[in-house]
Image 1 (cartoon, rainbow, N blue to C red):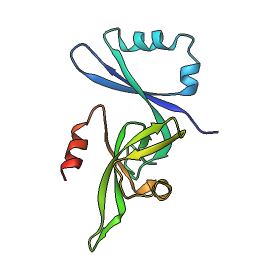
Image 2: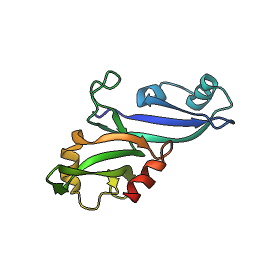
Image 3: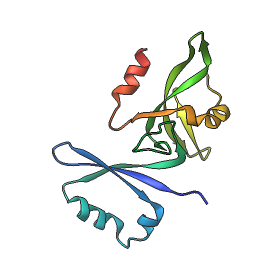
Length: 145
């Protein structure tokens, strides 16, 4: 069975943010999840949102992410676009991971020419470069290129 994880985002009264990743087992194991979470963070932190893990990892292989960084809903990713091949290789496209409830699937916005079936097969070539909550400027930069 697929593992379910959620990335919770919090903000305090002076604008600082923090994220916390919890598995479904951790969430369901707590009788009063939000009360215990707020007590552990402190009451000045307010929940800004939550993003679901796609079950996939990106191409990064670092000490921090030896198996690749987990890809969550709301993440901004860069990936080689096979429809933009040039002599120097593929151009990089930028997209956002979104959940589409009407189709019950994750999708990537900002990809005009990438076939989604092929994209998911090649997800190991993508790299998480940020997320829409903490790095919205990355989307503007991608649009201006």
